[in-house]
Image (tube, rainbow, N blue to C red; front, side, top):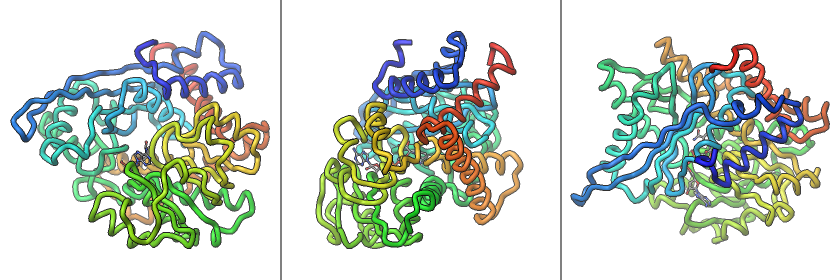
Length: 418
Ligand code: NAD
């Protein structure tokens, strides 16, 4: 499967192979568990504001169809490739299975820099991508959601384009859309609040009080910023944050409300007067209790895994830690890792709630949503921790084992086709 070759895809495969060995999955069953069921690459020409026509490339990977429709985000980022999207789709499969959702994993992406596109160009690109995907998606087939570089407005454009095609409104075609058109209360905050909840559980496990703990958050977008606010509510002091343009550090704690205002005005954390500048590599190695990578893949590597100085590594991003870094972390039992497929699962869990509400046209209160979210996260956390202790394996290995085993069993029951 050379078409998927990419460092992130290799990383996802390496994680899968280790767990497949651990579960003793027969060699004949491995390839169809590992490789995507379907993948699409589409050409997306759009008219730009300056009168030129530009072509972008878009992808969608549906990893498996065994348990229901596929589900996963859509990413807009210059480095998006088919291999990266395939890795993210694979992780979505294990994440949905770990949390007991009736979905296979999927992911989509467009190689573009959304910050360099006007709102009109972004809308044209989103509508074009949706149009090209129409034969392959549907509320019972494949349901998209926001990811890096996309947001509620992008989801609204997708839903509208799809609904124009069908001739009636289909809110269940995407999740993470605005509440006013069928979105769920709490969806925008779900991933970050879930990360905050799980960090709090991890603090209990290692016997630390939230008050007095220091947190460092890489990436101050949707997930990173909500995580930071959520930690602040638990009494944690957020001492450093960053985005694609640079980082900030204040050992006394950053005023998140003022920072949020600054980011709303300038679109970056850089230049905020309440903290000093720090580089992203420096930020990852700051002494703290809680380190939250909430941006890109492959941030904790062979080079810095021995140097990070936290007690909890909460993987809000997908795939932030490489397998080589994992080997180093295995030798550092003082660090409690909340693996990505568990740590950031709050987003897809509330996406599932949104989809259910859309299909039923019956909407829940935010309290109902959050209560149900925390119950699911609690169960997944408890099961992962219990397996990790019972089999003396890492939290990552335990979470992946639970997810992969459930998909493998479903495939065995259904047969060769799905
Ligand atoms: P976002 O676009 O809202 O924010 C991403 C942030 O990361 C931005 O602040 C950006 O400037 C920053 N960033 C980009 N490159 C960086 C770099 N090299 N160093 C430091 N910061 C950098 O995206 P998001 O939705 O918050 O997603 C962040 C991560 O969380 C991604 O890995 C995504 O896959 C994962 N995730 C998101 C959701 C969700 O519900 N949005 C759910 C699960 C997982």
